[in-house]
Image (tube, rainbow, N blue to C red; front, side, top):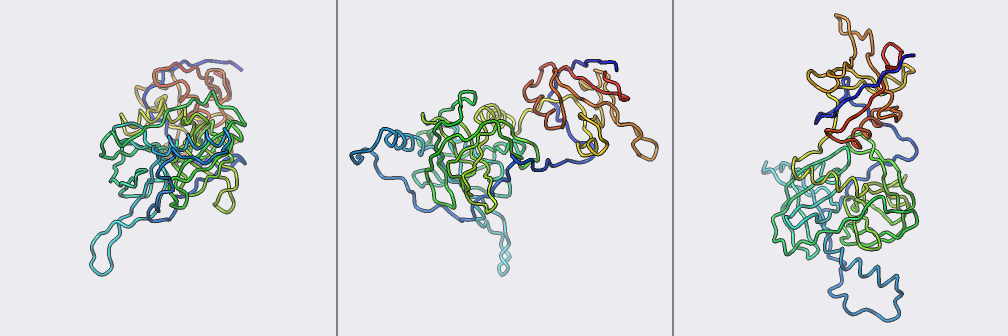
Length: 370
């Protein structure tokens, strides 16, 4: 078989599905996302009025935990989402609280980071700070495929304490972590655990795979979603997003979107309202179609005029006059020498390369490598 490498410069284009979206199925390590707690509003704060006076005999580890909570809890917020409903008697449209979740202060301009699934079904939002002051919030940006969202509140910068950011590459299994959030509406609840595993995968609300997820045994329950996972220095290392549990409550297996993904995407959501997606200017054939045909790689369904794929000479699906497929066209089997077995692999490769980066694709045409 002949091998041909196609070199493309990635553009700001979304690589979509030609025949509808395929939702990846569970693969053992994928977790279902918990829904926000149905508690209508936050309860009284669990934060002590003062942490300056501490009991004697506390261990160094306990003192460290207390200090991290003292500093970080001011950054954690409660998010209540509301749905519009019409009163049966007056016919007036009202905002009905339908769930709560967690979030944290990103910057002093009033931006709040949370999970996308916390705010996905709401029509209005209220953010409650650690001092129990509440503010209406507006959506700044959303990234369903990474389960991240940004809200904004109008508040004095002096009331906001952003969290410092850690780095995903510095994490190791076994290190101590802390989660602060609002499980079941119980605001500013602290749980402590360790990193149980790294490099996990979960399925996002958008149906895509989130990679390099942090697994922890720190208790994560409905309502914790969107809250921070912190290291022993009080730095953000993840956004609590999912649990693996048959009952829907904590089973000691929680998952957090990694901080490197957060720090890369949040500035994009603030600037554009959505992520910058590198692409090649093509629609894809659903993975299930290729798998049923016993083939490998990702098939190109339609090449968009003027895009990188067209300039590189890639070909899409060919159909007859009745719209029936007569040829699947090109299939991408490698990106920069790495195998591509699914659209998730392709999206992940493009994310790593970035807009304007160069991608060397190995494609199969007519059962020949090109």
